[in-house]
Image (cartoon, rainbow, N blue to C red):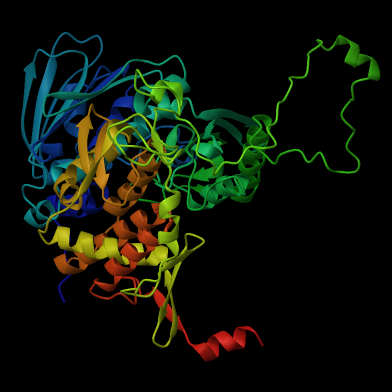
Length: 622
């Protein structure tokens, strides 16, 4: 075995495998460098979600020609000079690997001018090689243009997702950096379209509003706590506005975004017994700790951080969120039935003299009234020229010889009511039933007699099976049924989630969803598949569930993916079903489920119907 030192360009490509995973990784590194350079304005320009072009322009401190070349070398950094500096990191970047890794897998052009210099420079790199340096006229700051990402690593480029998916990741990274610096202006342009134009904000809440919309910013309450270990500030969402989809959950420490399942558990513990099942609240929590008490160098992308006193911070987060929720009346309600609670004050007896005097209305009762006696029609229903109840004919006979049956349905061609008492007997006529009766029980079950006993059908599971077969057929190219909403319903989903709906627009249309884009962060729902409710609340809840389905990873085989999607959508529709309310509706449901491919089990294997035998019924009475 021969041991050799890897060439610099290969070593950089290996390092790029950790640092540069997709276009969003490049956006993150370049935006963080711009912020570290003291930029007051950062502009990100993309073409084809970053495959063709990623350009980040800032008005920071800029670099000299020598620094512009040196910054592309591995471990070249201005943030660290001694080992002790590793214990006091307050900037985004510090390891000097980002630019070297980017230049190893893309073509990079840097235009930069240092503040106070008259002339700037242009530096070009490709495949970790310095191609050229020349003097140019350029604004103060830096302008990085990264073209043809992974052009020399075809396998990496091949495994990039669609433009919508890649751009969604870019938006996530852009949002994280923008939330750390409200005082900095940020702009995001994709394919010559302005997605975000964020001016310097007066406060963090204004930045949240600019990024995520009024819906999010109006549904959060402020959080503040300060201890000797950590200072916590930020905002947390109202419990009643929590959503099933993960999104708008952010932790920051000393101005740096990080992930922490452990601290997320602290947040969820503070919301205990306040959230609907499966819902997650929004939160924007900023932690300030001593830089010596954390290690930010444990992950290649610096999104995980090691805390020295994470248990203490867990308790502080839990306590301050609990206090904030209680202060805003989101905690447990007051129990007025407790014995030690003071009684509510009662009015004295003198209060009655201040009441206004009112007369009790007189009530007249006709003791001889019989609702089954023929009654004359109201005056406004009697044709002109005819007296009420009399026209020279015997009682109950109209002028045309038709029977006037008193109150009931209007007699066709006249303004008179007709009494349906003559038809009452028809309800009790002996008829030969073509099938046994089908009876709904509590809207949840349907019961009908069969040869071996009583068949009991679970309504929700039956609807789930019916919708599953219908969706599976629609995904295979069959027809679908869309029920149109009375008015189009707008649902704010955010820029990144809007891209998810765009990505799967064709599939949603084939299932019966009529959804159109509106702006950068909103969709308009014009119709839903048959069986779904189309009111505002139901549509918003359904869109949250749809988003979860669309963002999950599915099996690679198309048949398995279609079956999984159909099953998930069927569960959403079945959960919204109001239940069976009449025998006719129960009969239709039974006919439909018996015509399904497998009427006994749902797609997930749950039993839909069962038969109670006479012996089984006898045991219920033992």
